[in-house]
Length: 428
Image 1: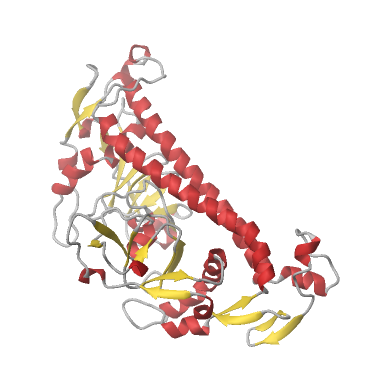
Image 2 (image 1 turned 45 degrees about the horizontal axis):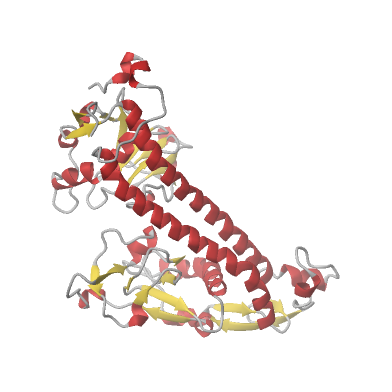
């Protein structure tokens, strides 16, 4: 470890922001609650509106660190990408003079900070982290140039992860727009019915679309196409109560529940026996559909795991994955309305709802033709997600070693001697 490194109290590196505000005074700003922060992902997964929040909240600025102070949400930590307000169950942290904000962020995301904070949390049902304990922690602190170099290394990995996420949003939007136009709105059929050439396709593809409609229980659909129930075109395998299959050794499978589906990983998940029926083993690229609680559909890329109850694994031997995925996406709002209307603590759908939900099925040659276009897009989405998972693992492996000085880095920024004196040291 470089001789310039020193130990320092966390309270000399960071300050807790206590700028509280009522949501009515913050109209137009975004609201961030614990539900909007990805667990262990260092990313924001959603936002709310300030005017929809209730009670007093904490104001934050772009670049502040937001840290979930409730157990089990300590691994919910992000850097704020905008000004806004957040739940009072989130610490708003700002670096002191002489501390690089990105370095502080990664320090707070590391077990060097998290583990002692978790151990010292107090409370019964929902233990809370204690700021007076956190600020008393003594941690290693490198000089400012090395703080920046460490943050730059880790930030480069996170930038690539974010670029993959944005690319995947675009790829899915393109694929879904094509699916909706051709198989839900029937734009090519309408064009041909009006004597126009369908836009955006070659003559061979256009010839596969009919030029008229016929009446069905769903209204007009392209002539010659079929209506089929969701459970006719796909197998919906419900998961098991995995608590009945505890691991018998260190060889185990993480249990994939609704929470894992929501966050996309199995960090801290329960464990199940690895010798369960192979049908209930989830692999990357499988379609998962939560049918109770928070109804969601995703293409799973969080690694091998065990399928828990309340989740369907959706598959088909006849239709391509993208066809199932986008029909589920199309019908999901309808299922969510059904679940919301349930007079229970956890809304859900039942098997008969899958039978009642209808998909419009074009002729097989057209599906095969479109498969050449859409399948590569979904494969690239999966590839990007797997790459991001690998980059996250590399980042998490590097993080403690960089923060302990076990891997030496040198910043390309100006040397410590060249910095203004007020930037040289952290000050309480």
